[in-house]
Length: 85
Figure 1 (tube, rainbow, N blue to C red):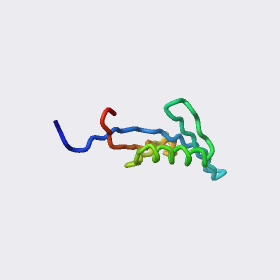
Figure 2: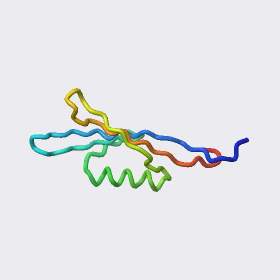
Figure 3: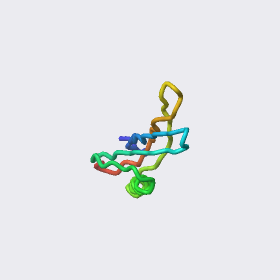
Figure 4: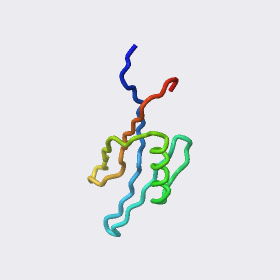
C-alpha cells in the first residue's frame, strides 16, 4: 500500500461573455448541484466555498471561439484525499 499523498481532481467551467464594443464582460458558473452564479460576488463566494472544502485551484486554461474571443475558462482544482474519500 502506498503511503504517498493521494488527490481528487475537479474541473470547473467559467463561461465568459465578452462585448468588446461596450467593454463589458459577463460570467456564469454552474456548480455540481445545478446552481447558477452570474453575479461577480456570487462567483467569488462559490470559489471561496470550494477553498473552504479543501479544493485548491492549480491551473486555468482559456478557450475561445473561432474569432479568438475567450468564451470559457477551465479551472482545475485538487484536494488531498482523506481516508474513505
